[in-house]
Image 1 (tube, rainbow, N blue to C red):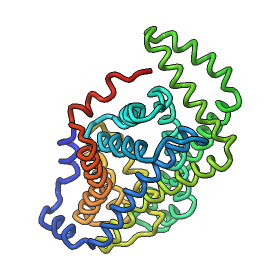
Image 2 (cartoon, rainbow, N blue to C red):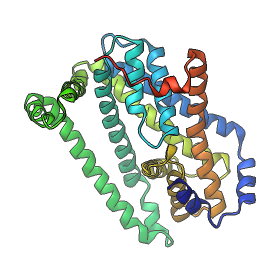
Image 3 (spheres, rainbow, N blue to C red):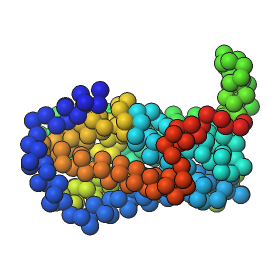
Image 4 (cartoon, helix red, strand yellow):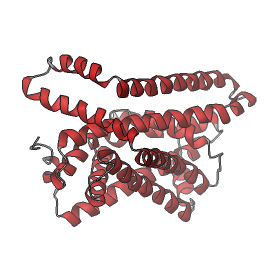
Length: 328
C-alpha cells in the first residue's frame, strides 16, 4: 500500500525540478519548522503531566522520554504505537500504573480532536470564502463549506458527550461494566481501570488553574504543528495565509490515517492534492512542499528519539518488548 500511494504521489512529477525546489528552500525557515515540531513535543509532555496528576505531576523527563519514544514508533510503524508505548514506558519509570496512564491517552486524543476540529471550523469561517470568489475553485467551495459544518456539528457532539460523561459518569460506568463482560475475564479489570482513568482525568475541571494550562498547552501544540506547513511554504518562496495551514494540516492528518508506516504516501498525496487543487501550486512545487512538510514533522522526532534511546542505553528489541510485562 505504501508503494501504491507513493506512486500516486510522485507520478507525472519531474524529480530534477522537485530536487531543485527543495535544494533552494530557505534553511533558516526549515530550522524554524523543526523547532516548532520539537516545541510541540515539549508541550505534549507538559500537558500529559498535568492530566496525569494536576496536584503532583510526574517528573518532566520520564514524561518527555515516553512521549518522544512513543511518537517515534508511531512514525515508524503502521499502527498508533505511541498509544501503548508511552504509558508502558512511563509506568516503568514512575509510580503511575500502566492502565491509568493509558486512560489519559484517550483524554489527549479527545483534546487533539477538539483542537483539529476547531482549527478547521476557524478556517471555514474566516478563509474558505476565497475559494468561492476564485472561479477555478468556486465549484469546490460547497464541499469545503459542508465539511466545515460537519466539523462544527461533530465538535458540538464531542464536547456534549464529554460533558455528559463528566456529570453522569456513574450511569455510564454501569453500562461500561456490562459491556466489559463481553471481554475475556483477565481483560476486564484492565479495561475498567482504563475507563476509570479516562473519567478520572475529566476531574481536572475542578482544578481551574490546571484546566487552563491543559487548554493553553493544547492550543500551543496545534498552533505549532499547523505552523510547520506555513513555515515550509515560506521556505520555498510560496507564502500563503496562516489560516491555510489549518486547512492543509487537517487534510494531511486524514492522510496519516492510511495504514502505512508514518503515513508515508497517503500524507504526501493528500497534501499535494490540497496545494494543486486549492492554492494553484504546480505539481512539482506541491510535491516538494509535501516532502519537506513531512520531513520537518518526521525526522526531528526520529532523531530525538534515537538520541534518547542511546542516552538511556535501550536497544530496539528492548523497546519492542517494553509493553509485554506491565504490572497492573
